[in-house]
Length: 239
Image 1 (tube, rainbow, N blue to C red):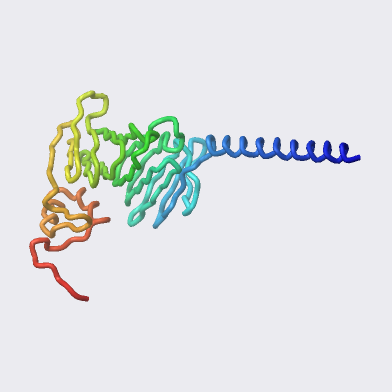
Image 2 (image 1 turned 90 degrees about the vertical axis):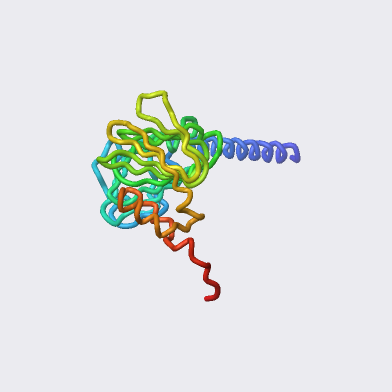
């Protein structure tokens, strides 16, 4: 009798163990195959288009698949977060395609067709080789924070932290941009290097930077994060 009960319990535990293994295997499969990128923040008019669908609204919290296209309207933006440590912010009037940002076995790629974008790429092995591609420039990174803006006048990149390699699409020639550097590519692919370090102190930006924005409005996207002030003035204390 005791032997029968023992055998029944052993069979029950074996079945339970097998069920747990199958569930864990299914969970791993789903994590590997299903979307693990989502719209963390959505402001204004943001739309998504998958390969098998038309444009539709992208609600906050929505899952995003590899190959999805995202576009934003005026006064709109979206922040996208992935399981592998990639944060992407697309500003107003922006359109981009997201490729391989979900899959962990290939470097992610953002094809920025127009507009403003900012990236925080955590420095792990899965993110090495992450790229942002525009019609006039390519930026490859490891672990860094940077922005890319593309318009009819070309592409600019600004590095907030770390370093990126920039170049023209299809060219093996690259140039390094480090913290505070900006690379500006003309529509024909000509590179102009600009040092912006004197304008910035963390999230603070000197009032003189407004002249840079006046000369090239694309740098206005920097003001989404940075706060303008007179950095030559004496600091104010107290409330």
